[in-house]
Amino acid sequence: MVLSSSEISQALYEKCMLLRESGAAEAWLERLVAAPTQSQIAGQGHILRSYLSETIEPLLSEIGFEQEIFGNPLEGEPPFLVAKRHEASGLPTILVYGHGDVIHAQEGAWHSGLHPFQIVKREGNIFGRGTADNKGQHLINLLALKAVLEVKGKLGFNVTLLLEMGEEVGSPGLAEFCRAQMDLLRADVLIASDGPRLMVDTPTVFLGSRGAMNFDLRINLREGALHSGNWGGLVADPAIRLSHALSTITDRRGQIQIPAWRPKSLTQDVRSIIAKLPPAEDQESIIDMDWGEESLSPNERVFGWNSFAVLAMTSGVPKNPVNAIAGSARATCQLRYVVGTEVDAILPALRNHLDTNGFQDIEIYGDDKVRFAATRQDAENIWVKKVISSLEQGAGSSVHLLPNLAGSLPNDCFSDILGLATIWIPHSYRQCAQHAPNEHMPETLFHDAIRLMAGLFSDLDSEMPSQKIKSN
Image (tube, rainbow, N blue to C red; front, side, top):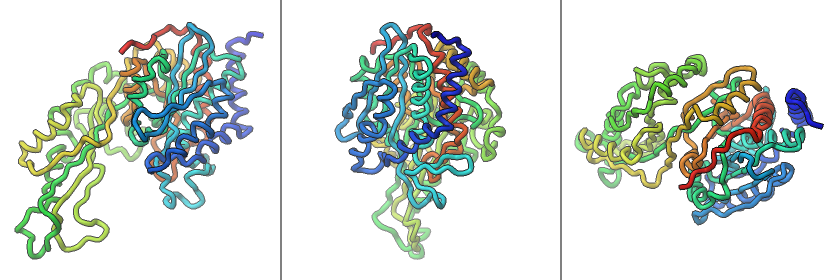
């Protein structure tokens, strides 16, 4: 019997309600969270691999995926899993991405009664490491696919799942794997989930991400420390020198002072997308309205502009200070940048800026630091319009469309290497304590996202136009 669209919608709603009421969805989340897949800790290779081969394998089998685990092209780095469900030649193929690794547990820093690798429900939230980043998010998409299959008996498209286990350490080998496996990963569009919604009760779609470049600024004036009484006023203080150097990079409200770091890609089209978002002061109470580029709105600053941050600083021994002037100082810094920033000019421009301002003694170390590329999909892409239409129908309200995520993720592997339209639908929110103790997923968000994604996957049928992968 062929079901009408309204009958399919009702059946999907009932299926998703059953996943909630039976506890089946949360049981899967509990299983995934229990795997201590901390990629930032050395010697975890067997645990990372077992997440792919044992922890999530039964769910993928239920969906009808053919699965294969691949070694990383870079020696010693975490593996990848590619799972495929092929329904028919000529149908569009959706590439779904997620990462099963998490940051270190930070055990002992969680609230009483909470444990990183056990889910605990408290005050409407589900606590546990990975609930928001990223186990809960890719689980939502997989359960949504499963619900569609159980209702319709088919998806109406082919799907490829790519799971990596090293995103939290910069996705080592992902770009190389995508280049080597272009035929295996051939698709029409990427639909993936990571990061937070703009506001917890409204679906968000973002079309790329800001890039990130981390680097150290170091100054080493002498070996060892010198007594601050005997030498104070006679020898230069490296911490003071470094602090003054940092103060030239931005002004007192954080406005970037290096011309090459100020982007020219905040076009009227991008401004128009950002202008439709709710004002920043309505999103979060902790936003500092007088920080950042003064001529821009707070939303433009975070989604259309570059930002500089000092992530950590050290000089001397902060835990046990002594009356001595340190011989060296170090700051770990980061530039988050949007499309249009000349990446190869970032560090040379900094070098020139420091030299011009008299800080030739400040050294820059950036070769071994984290880097993500900036990406941004065209909002007029037909896949984007189809996804937004479906989500708005399912939510009964407009979605928040972002030109790019304010944070960074390896989207360039999909947009630039695989040549795909890239659409991200985050299932978390800003206050989820991602990368911190007490990470959590709101119960309502978890279950509503399954329903929304089931509706979306049901809508992505064979009538969608083919936009095949380009040759590189």
